[in-house]
Each structure stands twice: as C-alpha cells, then as structure tokens.
Image 1 (cartoon, rainbow, N blue to C red):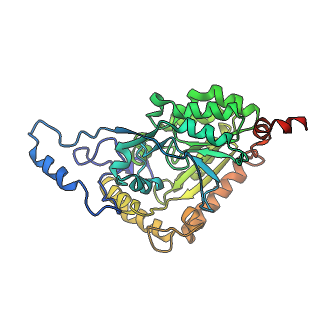
Image 2 (image 1 turned 90 degrees about the vertical axis):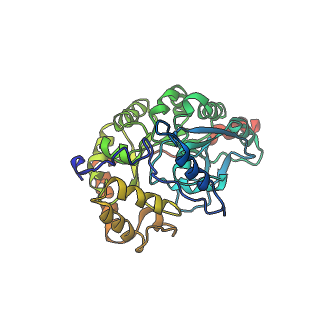
Image 3 (image 1 turned 45 degrees about the horizontal axis):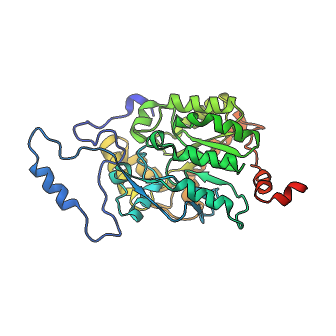
Length: 365
C-alpha cells in the first residue's frame, strides 16, 4: 500500500498520540468508571478538556519477576517485564489483554496506566542466586517493552542488565525502541561472553504506517540505526517483522528483509497479526476510524488467516496463521531469508559462564 493511500484520522475525532481509540470494558469487572467519565465530559466548561490524555505511573511490588512462558509457540522459556502496560501504544499488541489482570482496560488504559516494578532488580538477583536455577535464557520484554519511554527515567532495565552481566547470564531482549543504545556499553561486554541476543521489532519502512500502528515508538530511521549499531558491535540482532498485517504492511516484507540484512541483521522472524481477546474490537474500531477505505479488506484477510475469525487462540496457527494468505506471507519471508540472509544465524547463547560463577566447584574443570 502506498503512503498516499493512508487516510489519517481527523485529529478532532481521535485520541492524539494513542493507538487505541476507545476505552474497553474490563471483562473481569461487573462495574467500571464509565458513568463517571461521561458525567465529567458534560461538566467541563468550553475551554477545558475532559480527558487530559496524560500517562500515569503506579509503583507495584510483585512477588516474582522471572516468569515461565508456558506457550509452546512463543519461542522463549522465561520472560521478565519491568513494566506492565506500554506507552508505545501499538494498536495490535497481544499484551493488551494482560492489563485486565491488573484491574485496567485493554484499550487506552493499556497505554496510559503504566505499572512500574521498582523491586525487579532485587527479585532478579534472588532468582539468579537460587540453587535450583540452571541458567535458562531470560528474555526481557516477553509481554511489554522494557525500553518504553519511562525506562529513560527509571533505568530498571539497565540495572537488570548490569546484574545479568555480573552473573554472565544468557539474556534476550525484545524491543522497538532505540533507547537500547543507551546500554550499548553493557551489551558489548555481554557479547564477549556470547550471553546476549537482541530482537528489534520493525513492522514497516514507512513512517506514515508506523505513526498509525505504533504512535509512540521510535521512528523507523532510529530503529534501522539501532540494527546497524548493534551489529557493528557484534551484538547478534534478529529483526521481527511482527506482526504482518495483510494489505497493510505485507507488501513490505522483501524490501524490509533486504534493508535490515544490509545493516547487519543475522536473521528475521515474522508473525501474522492475531486479534485475541479484547484486541479484536480495539483493532476494528481503529481500522474503521483510521483507514476506512481499507478496513473491510484488512479485517477480512486477517480472518482468512485464522479460520474465519479475528480472534484465534489456537497454538501455532495464532502465530503464523493458516490458509492461502498466511502461506503467501510465509513463502515471501522464506524467499527473503534465502536471498538476503543466506548463511547467517543467531548463535546459541552460552550458560557455562553463569554456571561456573554460581558453583565454584565447576571452576576446577
């Protein structure tokens, strides 16, 4: 799709700088605050705003930080998320549903109510010191981005990475924010021990598409720069074309793979968009308001990839999709890999350094 065909929503009708354009009721609550919100909207004067659209932050203190990932099709065993909710505002984000477990909605609440795990570094160190822990790779951002804007102030992710380096523990990172370059000093040292790999999410080469789908993320230019700088410093980079959305960014697969391959990426992976839980209504509302001329086509093709439904939770199919369109996407990605990434791969991370530090007896061998 050409940039000129993107119809951006009239800002007087939109929630500026947000992906979701509506507030979604929390499925676990019988009551919500919608009545109060509507009352306030009627009470403000003409020169006041009923909704300030500001992001608020709340400190939370969970009992655990490293979580086992039971899903067999995700590709990671353990994840760690310093924050819940994500200000990036990616309208398609599968993690939106998890915000309901914290008492908030999957729509604009997910982007404006950010929970900060202040005790994450202490919980992480406790895990690394545990006698039963065997050094399995821990991936930061399995749910929400560990480098979202608040990280610039809080530096929780950086403190966690300092611990991972100290313990020489295998580490994965998933992000779409160039803020990761702030921690290049740590990542370079980790790369010397082969204990780090980075996944950079890039859904498009178009800034207009990026602004529509991911309003508060790093620009495409900055993300490409991040791929290049990490690669120049021998830090393995996998680029995630995630998600591929039929008729929105699916035509960009080959040029995107070529671009990141030229910048030094060692591999690419893809997912087909899945609109699980509340995300189906959030995405459909966004599509009909933002790209009304293409909404039906996009929604119908997404459904074709998931057995005729927008909401698909079937293992395997939910990630890669099924049917003719999903196969075309997979075949295009495979062609791009053969053409531009032949002979490249992400190395298996090394846990031996961590195990030797943890058990001094092993140092004798």
